[in-house]
Length: 344
Image 1 (cartoon, rainbow, N blue to C red):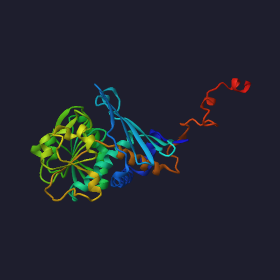
Image 2 (spheres, rainbow, N blue to C red):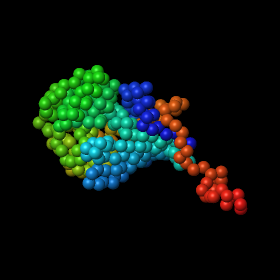
Image 3 (cartoon, rainbow, N blue to C red):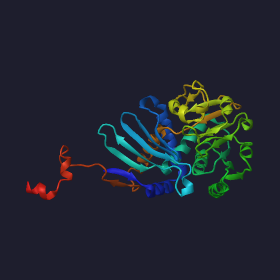
Image 4 (cartoon, rainbow, N blue to C red):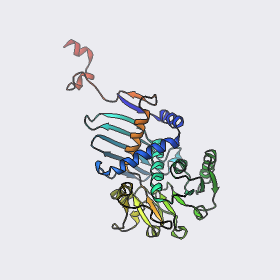
């Protein structure tokens, strides 16, 4: 039997435990796993692109546990009443090859993306950062806000989106969560005075939602919307202003903001900062940029946190996902006609 956490169970788990507590637990596992970077068999995600979006498979293993996530990204889905991103994931025992957990990951991905962003910001943003600008107030925005409050201490949000209804939605949700929200008149207005700038737009295009003119000394930029070839958010000159940190360079060079610059453009992989091998922020005026595209290790960590969190609970059910004939070599017995089998 395989533990299955469906949408209803995931919703109940998050509501009962609390999103901030879950984000903190995912961040702890992410940080632990990044520090043991060498244990993992890593590969850039496998993507299948279409005119409307992309479908991706994100596999990884540490030699004991194998994990993967199936995820799509279709920016025009909301116009059809559908989610931009949907996902599910699996953990399996390497020794037997048997799956041990199967879970929805649309909600879980939002939690892990937020946990990764805020965990990186603890390393890269100024320690006294309390104000964050959000450029893009779609599905990810509330999760980002919760994570940055839980892990960094952000209390005030400055928001901008080209979709006024999305800003209405976010303002209702965020004020209900206790944030001070300033509704900006433009992206330029939103970033004014912000310690951290998070860009989280969905359009699959080389967009410029943040220009270098408005990047001030000491700011930390959390760029999470550029996550596939041909999809970016930053004016490429911004990358020249500070230090760029990434998850897994082979994937980020294809999908991240750094796809806009030369292949030898210098970046620092975050695992080295988690390990203390290199420094993150070294001065108050340093500009830091987290070029985040989402990496399979983070999903592995999130699934592990979920697996640990639901053990011994009723969050989820056991499903009969793996065929189990009495004789492991006689799989046909499970589908053979009982009358024929008894007659023989």
